[in-house]
Amino acid sequence: MIDTFIKIRFLDVIDILLVSYLLYEIYNLIKGTAAISIFIGIVSVFIVWRLVRVLEMEMLSEILGAFISVGFIALIVVFQPEIRKFLLLLGTPSFIRRRRRRFFFWKVNLGDEPLLDIDPIVKACHKMANLRLGALIVVAENNELEEYIDTGELIDARITEQMIESIFFKNSPLHDGALILLNNRIRAARCVLPVSKKDDLPAFIGLRHRAAVGITERSDAVAIVVSEQTGKIAYSKRGELQLDLSPGKLKNILETEFNP
Picture 1 (cartoon, one colour):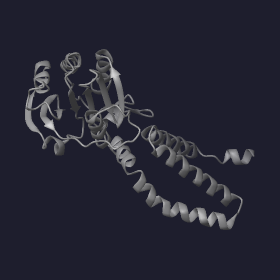
Picture 2 (cartoon, rainbow, N blue to C red; picture 1 turned 90 degrees about the horizontal axis):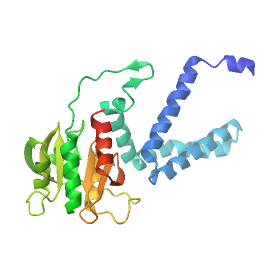
Picture 3 (spheres, helix red, strand yellow; picture 1 turned 135 degrees about the horizontal axis):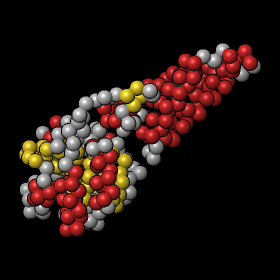
Picture 4 (cartoon, rainbow, N blue to C red; picture 1 turned 45 degrees about the horizontal axis):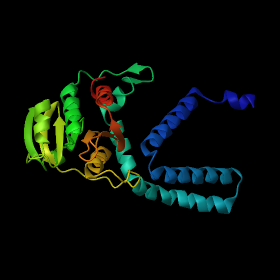
């Protein structure tokens, strides 16, 4: 037993830590979705396969081995949205920034990033919530959302409370659709967004909330929703939806996300 322990290399420890971290990130991406049950099922089959190989149960080992080899293709098909989100997460500097710009013992300097004018957004959302004005605001990060910007009306204006409120005023021709903010500017209004098909969203939410979840499933953007029916503020990131936020809570979330 001592000889076996001695044979464990430092690289083996690093290997175990990296695999554990990878599984942890995958779990964070799929938790709360139907995919988590599929993921647990696949892990269970893999564990059983390894066990029957150790026990030298040849027939069962061959059957499970064939299932796993073919199942890899099925895995890509089933988890396509989650794989897309995971690769997007790894490919964005915000992934590093959220972890205090550190990978293990190295500090990564990404340079200065433009700040977001948070106060006008929060104040406008607070006033629109009190007036029961529906609104959908998308704040782009590294993905510039050009394909969705092209569906709306280009504006390219400074972010102000009055500008946001005037866009979502009920009689405004631009109020129907999403407002997209890019590089600390109002880039476009009346944009058409994809609607999420998640079946675990609350039944009472409307198309604005589903569009907010849909755009954050497909990009690294964040979305803010003001409900016309309830006057409540919601926030979406990575396909997850937070309901009934106070203006103070919304400000804290945006400061953590954009102005750390």
